[in-house]
Image (cartoon, rainbow, N blue to C red):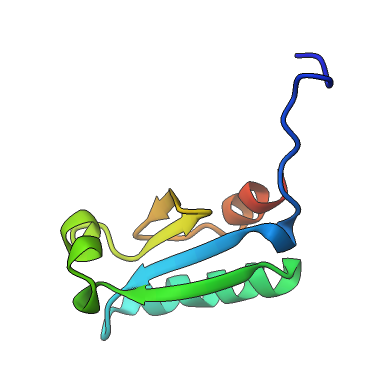
Length: 91
């Protein structure tokens, strides 16, 4: 595809990563470490949301937590791969 027609990806610092998790979840704790590292390295804003406090998130993701969203779109669930998340935020 011609570079003229390619959409320019947002800069990493213009992205938002959301970690959907619940208390007491060891996979969620592991995911948070990866999200904190990658977002910290790239200057990306991140947030966490607790599915026990949000019925809509609970209904949507309760079987998949932890879930990582990038700009509101599901990126991954259960295990977060550092390289894959970094690539999603920089490509």
